[in-house]
Image 1 (cartoon, rainbow, N blue to C red):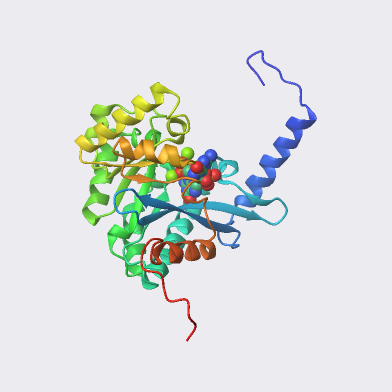
Image 2 (cartoon, protein in one colour; image 1 turned 45 degrees about the vertical axis):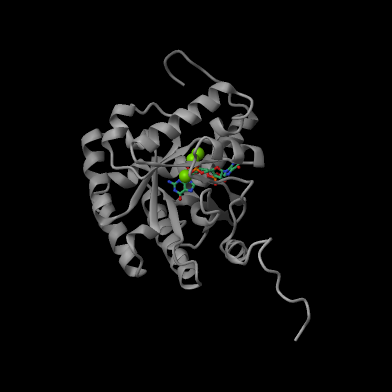
Length: 288
Ligand code: C2E
Ligand code: MG
Ligand code: MG
Ligand code: MG
């Protein structure tokens, strides 16, 4: 390892190194080979009770390893630069899908797409986003981009310019995993953000851990006073949902609403959600 450090190559380590190598080699051209799939996780608006959006989450359908979660290949793709073609594929696929759902009657549905730092470094990024929206005849409010705090804290001047450009074409920008990074609030205030996504680590224990509840409450108040909406991630129970509603949270996302779904399953989910609610007039039971 150098620097007077050494480490035994254990079988487990060797296996994990081989795994990394296999993933690295396989990642090249992964989008072109059609091995990526998007799953979609619905977002519930607490005020209207409607599903207002879905977050696109990428998976790699690996020929030998099966479905690989993003945490196992996105960091590697960021290191090697493969994230650029992957990111463009995700954007294209997500917009194509949301255009289909809008045509199917979910007229105001929005899709949230995760973006890595490396993608933003490409000068062509904002242009690519604008062209992709045009290709699918979508208004810019059909798309929201999610950046993690670390990404947003990158180069302040560049970030302000970039977010300004996105705001001008009308694309919303959310800060993902809010609370886990080290954002300076003074700095966040200067960015044209549309939304903060409260990290799931604060949500999971919100009813028992007074500190988590305070962090959620303060973040929601801060966001609202800056004119920014709040999405809570990782909502798994009805009591977490009610707690967040009580704190004034706008939108919730998590297993309690739905796990991330394949596009076919998400189509069914959206159909069922849009159907007349329980408690409404029941259709006549007599067959015609
Ligand atoms: P994220 O953007 O914070 O996405 C939320 C993650 O939390 C997803 O994991 C989702 O499946 C999981 N999750 C949602 N609700 C719950 C819940 O109620 N309980 C629990 N325990 N987990 C929940 P996933 O799909 O494995 O994605 C992990 C991360 O990978 C994402 O975190 C995002 O940072 C990254 N990622 C996913 N797709 C993309 C992509 O297309 N591009 C980039 N750059 N990153 C992506
Ligand atoms: Mg996200
Ligand atoms: Mg998140
Ligand atoms: Mg996360």
